[in-house]
Image (cartoon, rainbow, N blue to C red):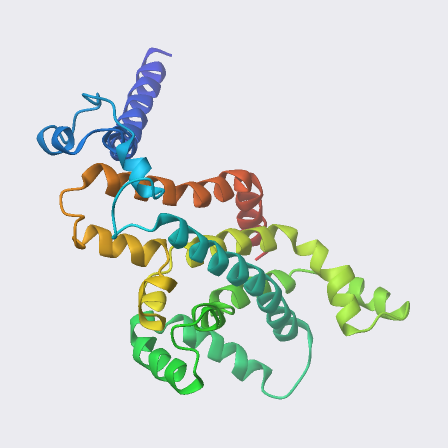
Length: 282
């Protein structure tokens, strides 16, 4: 028992040390966001603001004199993109996954292999083709250009297809005997059974679209379509007047992480349940 207790204490000590390493940057971020610029510059790692200041948050929300931070616009654009992309991915990825899993048609296997091939292509390779397509279709620097190329993704199709494969065919056969069509069977019978996979896809889609940077950078120009990622990139790279604004930069970064954290913690248990169910059934 003594050896077992010592091992347990050692293990918990190690876990606490690792937790401190991961949590420390967030604590420093919160502390720095309520400092003044001189205090943040001279004492960057201090956890005690001296003096306490909310000037960074006032500037962030437009109460200060600046022309390099438009947080309300960035937040609104990110929200619009994330909501539309998340809803679109959940719906269209589910449709595509169901078709690849259940419908018999010529070329189904080829399409599934094409989806797997897309997963292996680095996103940076597609940046120039995306830019050219958006220019040619007239979607460049529009909300449509920001949203439509992201509204379906290969990873989501793969997740849904694999989950649909675990559902017995007998359930659909019973629905079709009762007169339900293909879409009715999908929407009312099969889709509700994939709730863990849908929640997993929702979390991944929201997180990915909220943090999307390269596509937004390629698809837009000018300040009116900036999202939090592109806006913060300009802020952190030293946009005019933003040099040495450490409290402001960290305040923007901290607030930008809140929506993703809320979505993840709200659906955390279901997310883990969906992952475990998929691994067990697979």
